Amino acid sequence: MTLTSDETKFVEFLKSFNEFYWPSHKIAENSKGVSILPHDGEKNEFHMYALDEICHSCRIFREGNVRFTPKTTDALWYKKDENNFFIFLIEFKGDFLCKTSSKCSLVEVVDSLKAKNYYDELSGEIKALDKIVDKYSDKMLNGLAAKPLETVTIALPLIYEEYYKDNNVEYLDIREFLKNSRIVYRVVSISADYEPNRQRTRGRSYRCSNMIPSACRRLARERNDRELEASYESSLETFHRRYEMAGIVYSAGFVDNMAFNNFIENYLK
Image 1 (cartoon, rainbow, N blue to C red):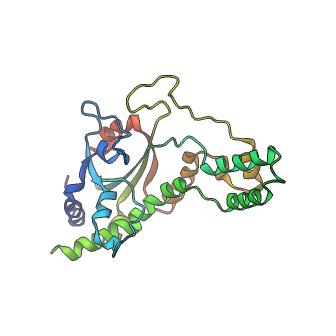
Image 2 (cartoon, helix red, strand yellow):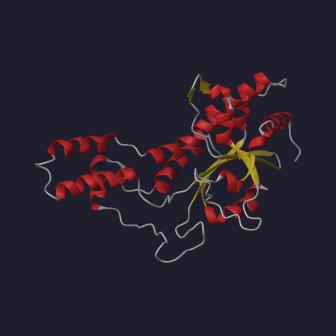
């Protein structure tokens, strides 16, 4: 790659965190050390920067014993292609994004209580739950929607600020650099038949249903709340379109965990 002066500064900034330059399958591990990426043979050995770990290492996100790290994507990588500098933001999510929001599950519970004639006995609780449903916003959906925004507008600029203060380097206007780069955001989620130990028996396989509970459909129409009848992926696509139209990211989308190695070969290398 032939890099410009600013691109070189950005790459040197990333290389200052080489202790967090990890194989993809390691970055994709959950808290129990189980990766959503298959890594038999040479699969998913491609190294990227573990952005969450970088944030946790930075003083700028700590005040005393309090840590206030932003919501960031799990991994970051870069690539120069002709005259374009690409920054890849990768989020590994060990969940099925084809399913509906947990908000719909909450609506189902409330509807079930009403249907079982518990209203007289639990009227106060049911009214309280109705109010919760009205204000409820899905944590996983919000997190996935916020991660590319906070990565670009909060995390990387503040990490660079600490790096610049700690090192004798020529200054890079990181916000302007990010604005002029082509930022690609991908959410990597579990495929419907994925089993980490490859025991894909019919009894253990998972299939996302296209059936939306009637209570969720009804309330979605009444309250104009699309989240109640849309899958996580469908809801996120709406956010992604807005980010692309606003020029915050160049491209946003999804990759099946079983296809991520192909994504590496086709786009990251």
